Length: 360
Image 1 (cartoon, rainbow, N blue to C red):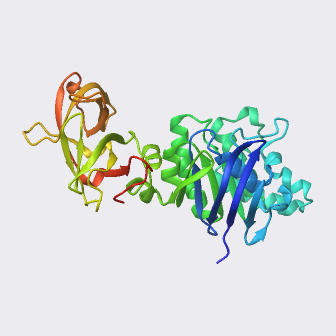
Image 2 (image 1 turned 45 degrees about the horizontal axis):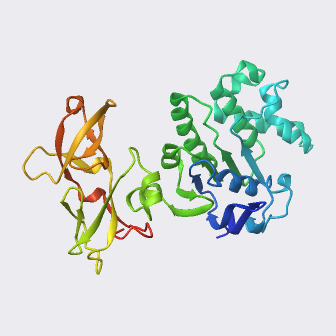
Image 3 (image 1 turned 90 degrees about the vertical axis):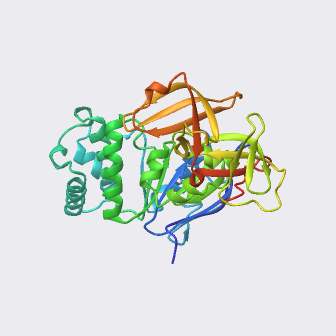
């Protein structure tokens, strides 16, 4: 099957600075791919290269099996939705949505059909005669999406489209985007720094750091089987605990500052004595006031979030920061020392040198 979008050893340099470093990526036809990473990781540059708004220093970009590396943006069969909406203030909603079709001399009846269909899909039929200044942020974003939909492209490109919206509207628009993709079934490449957007929208997530791909996988794969320390620390909220230790008897990690030994879910063969970073999701640290508690935590701050309480503190007899996420209300634990047991399903072991996951 021909991929919807394929990048083959793509590199982008600005002068001496390498922004994207020889990445290869294939998005299947109809797949929703999310590029995620911190600011400056290269994700928006990748999107702009797919769109043809940035040149490629080295490598190839394919759309539906066609090499478009040197093809003009308007000839790539893509539509892009930007962070800032980019609507013409003097035009009505209908005129904004139809502008690109007017430039290509699309027949008026066809323009009317496409604009009407897109407006119906997005629920903005009653807004077609308004100007952008009369619209809310969410309505403007729908218009920007409608402008992309009417072009009926093979590939949709989204560059942090929800970042200007408030939290409630972002959550609503995430649902609408997921439903829209399900309805249209078009290949979509979506850029965000928000891991919630990535986890809820993506068929597969591409996690980037300093212009290089760290891991590609489904939301469940990157959360449950992070390839390395960077992915483990980037995906998941609250952030995974990272504790320095070394492997004892292949199936335990000893934390030297506390003397605690953590049983591993599986042994690491031939690794006795190896320095490691023990990764434990905050959800895997369970309150245990009994004598069999594995770790002890000095709680400094308890953040009650309604369905859970996030405890922030340090390990007893250590300066290592640790976070536990408990169901329900536990605000009374602030300032106290508590015992914790560990759910092995939330335990990961990373090589202290390479950062690679040793057990998943």
